[in-house]
Length: 293
Image: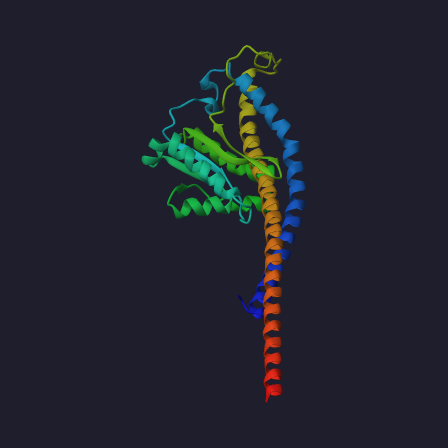
């Protein structure tokens, strides 16, 4: 059994850790509220814009815009959206695992030829792929310091420029979609070329929009905006998911610290009682020895 001093030191250490995890949970809860409001407000607009664009682009010729041209995916760009900080459970590990699975299962031939590039948004994914000598394009870790549409658009514009120049034939984004504080959905979406609406007989796919000045001009105007919005939505989703995952992880850590404190205090009381019993035994034995003398 550990001595009293060791147990007291462990109790003090666990108590300090528990205070830290409580504080981190409260900070994440406050940030989660703001992040949730941002993604909830943007999501309907982004989804409707994507639906309109896919509906309109379905009837256009591929030559009308470089961003809807379907090409053989010889060169692939994967956008991996993670976070800059840890202590969020399996949040970062899961998104990296999903991206690696996408590469190994869908783009294994391109990867073997060295034709898979990575755009990492977040320090955790940036460090992971750089250490493993992947072709990592740029450094976007500062985006979270000022997460605005303008700053996210800089990344989108660089991606669109590379796609238009033929540097990439397909762009996919991997991120955690926010559902609630306790659940994040790992999502993989094709960013470029812009997916077209599937042919179906439902009313939504047959929506007839009145367009002015022309369908082609409007689609060409909407495509860059839609790509920027979709990437911005993915980053906002990931940002909200990060705070939800961290809040849940810190709540569980605080709970575990409480359980450990109970066990340590029980161990401390047992050690103290053992020490008192030993002292009493020694006193009684000494007194008996003196009396017997």
